[in-house]
Length: 327
Ligand code: NAP
Image (cartoon, rainbow, N blue to C red; front, side, top):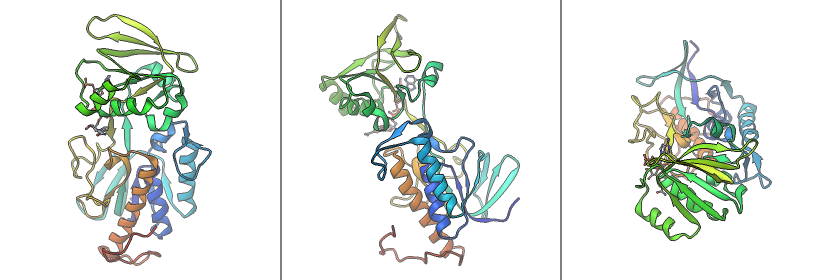
């Protein structure tokens, strides 16, 4: 067991590394327990073209390595392993990686969310080569292609509608005739001549060696299969927040997303903050995650300065509510 740290960040994605960068620059000596597969969802995207400051785009893994390096430059330390248990019932908070215990006066939870996948071997093999779970990130690579989207919820419809900007045709494949999506989204899709709704079908196989060439679809009523040519497949069957460790200790919504007080990263436990996709099922962008990571570090800094009587911070004193947030 080590001495209590000022800040432990759990999670190594855009939110976690940004939180660490700000905490490190405030002399809070953060430790990031970044997970065995550090980097988050951007590790499975190819070119990131919508992160400001990279006009020529950057590969997702490279961008995450740069985020990490920037946090490290100011003294952040890392544990490249998964947290297995937490106890936020008293301060200092306790965090375990297997048998190793860490203690912290404040904690920033930035464990992100994971896209649900179909679970096909061919889907796994062709991820980043025509198979994606993020239309905003990857849609523009598939101009003038026949794009398929699987799912029947708002995400699938939203992605499908967005993808009509790029594909010459977008086919939404859903396993039932009834959709979970809101009526307005369904109406918009029905009114869009580029969109075809294909029900009740599931994707049984993604075809192609080095990149996607087609799909094998199965009709769930007749069991008949058919092969179709495809230029891309977007899987939009939902995301799951990575919150299993926290559900019995932190307030969350019905889908397991942590609930932060509006306009802040404060959870129901004083001194525990939530940043990034773990508390955001709406925007889910690297840039918004990074922004909320910054907020969490500032919130933690302020908490330590007021509640814990911390004097080591270089940059902040408690701010009156009306004062604008520093950038
Ligand atoms: P969702 O509502 O849970 O829908 C997931 C869809 O994927 C369902 O239609 C489900 O089919 C299907 N599905 C799940 N597992 C599957 C599998 N293994 N194979 C094939 N299909 C599968 O998820 P979501 O669309 O991501 O939405 C999540 C939440 O965010 C919702 O509350 C939604 O309203 C909200 N959201 C809102 C907006 C917006 O308002 N603009 C946009 C996006 C998301 P079944 O229906 O048969 O279960």
